Length: 230
Length: 297
Image 1 (cartoon, chains in turn red, cyan):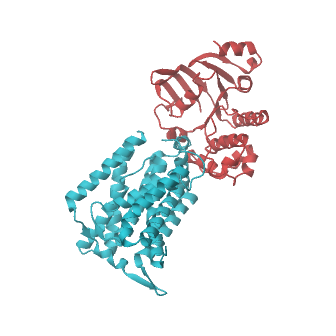
Image 2 (cartoon, each protein chain N blue to C red):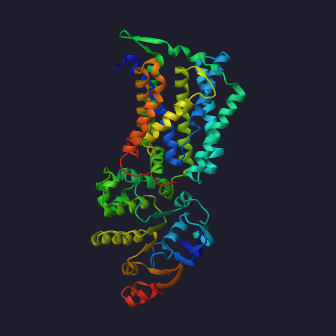
Image 3 (cartoon, chains in turn orange, yellow):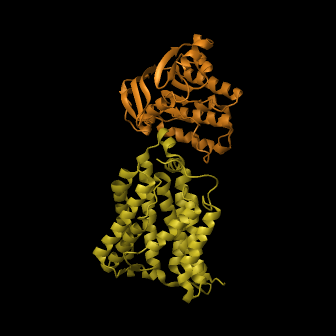
């Protein structure tokens, strides 16, 4: 499965959030999307999910257009989003949150393979989701998305507000998710870690693609800083 | 103030019926952020169905079936013609739309059936008393309590034990995220509206049995009190809305029974003053923990 954004253009009223963005995410790949606040990273993910106004370009999953589809239809086509701020259902139990992920699943089955990745979630199944720590909630949000068995996983700043130790857990999980053959589009503020992990990382600024970096560029701080302020 | 067993049974019965109406209103609010002011007119339409079935000489069970058919047909029509096309509009637009629907239905009832009303005699026997241990209690009081308890228990089972119920609860908390997880908006909204219609039909049967004189303003006062109860309990969750409906119905029944006949006109004053006081102290509702409303669709 390959997700292709072709000359994507997103506009809120008179404001262009993203202009002519073309990127591709293939099976078992992690593609990073980094850049300063307001660069259009989250808008790109929301546009893929049918929740931001696309005024030009195309979004295709294995050649099939997703543009103009409702969020639930995009999810059922095999794209899962881990939204910014986790957006778990705090009043529901961990188990109920996970069951919600089944709504988009295209084939029957259990959740065991996902819970193997997040043993802490397996242990907390009966707890109220709102009672979990921030790191646990983030793991739950990723697990909930994976329960749908998506072909493409979109993550919007999964390390935001987490302790360094928990960030390690999240990035380790992303590497494991890639090994399972899932295409991952990762929006992050931790540029260096993202560049090091991803197969390639695109730097967005003012809604436009400025630069594409590979893992070898992770330690080239000058290049990263220059790309951010381009 | 002394409260008789009859008053207590009547208050529990009214609380049960109002709880059903409240959960019907609360379920739709949960998924659409829409306060359906036309809910009372759906109940009124169901009451007319029972009344006319009675006039035509139909047995009471056939009248009740007709009531369900009429209320459910109108509910689905309302969903297709008003709720769905307007669901992305602001809450104010949707509220005004339901006001318009309410007055339209009331006007149609006046034109079609007249102001004077029709008697639903087929359900009259439910108003006769049962002698329970020397205490005279109206059959409808007992029936309402049992029916409300069964309906609420079934609803609770649906919400807590089924996927559809889980999707409805999630949608009521955060519809945007629920949709991004693949939960179908139309199915969840349709389900909530349908259940709300069933509860309106059940309420219509119970209220008609309590008061067989069906007029175009039938259930209007009840709906206003229930809406106050829903806000009092907490609008954003079905359980809090239900408890709010029950509380205001029960309080209304107790106060109505306890007040001397020559002071009964003060009942709404006491009731709504209490509602305002409670909301000043707990603006999110009596039975809702924590914060504000969930995100709109």
